[in-house]
Image (tube, rainbow, N blue to C red):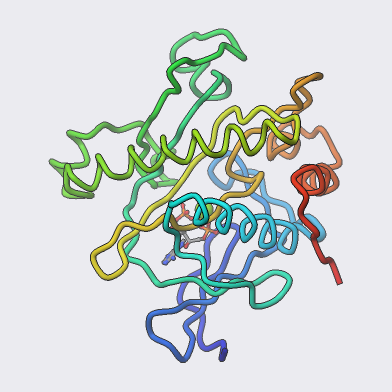
Length: 239
Ligand SMILES: Nc1ncnc2c1ncn2[C@@H]1O[C@H](COP(=O)(O)OP(=O)(O)OP(=O)(O)O)[C@@H](O)[C@H]1O
Ligand SMILES: [Mg+2]
């Protein structure tokens, strides 16, 4: 697999062309950002941990019928993925209220949300990723109504699978963000599922085991990601 020129670079990952025009190499860097890029730091081994964590979760979701862009691991911190036309949309599922939701609506932190809450956000750091709904998506042409429905259905289907997956590791899946794109006319789950893009609390102590450790300066960020991986039965290679 030949790694060609860099196509794009975001706050945490970079994408490279390959000899196959339908495939990209996704490199997970150690760079860590929060608050729409206002807080940035490189955390040792984050790229490797997140790449291998993502591969494990993507393969698990695929085994349960959710199709994803992930093809295979290429190295410790790189994966081969399908090249998609991405929607400029973030799909968020919440099982407990926390973070921006509590601020926005004055909700008590930790409130159990049953049924789980689904939200669309526009991917736009300069605007602070604002909350949007189906009507914005259709009127501004960010996706069709059918595609919006499909993103919501897949996000909630993934939730049923992932809540149980994390429960086995004594973790509460509090919330998470997914991104989707189109490959040959088909909707696929893209981007990543790692502790950078979800919230995980220990079921007994409610200890935060995700990127809130970085946002809130709680320390041991990557050590904690590693503990989550270990509880889920992953074998992360750091060499
Ligand atoms: N399979 C894919 N094909 C094409 N682009 C993808 C694919 N998976 C993810 N991406 C895009 O690659 C970029 C990943 O980089 P990163 O997550 O570091 O970006 P970011 O700084 O979070 O920026 P953004 O706000 O656009 O996500 C994102 O823009 C994401 O939407
Ligand atoms: Mg991103």
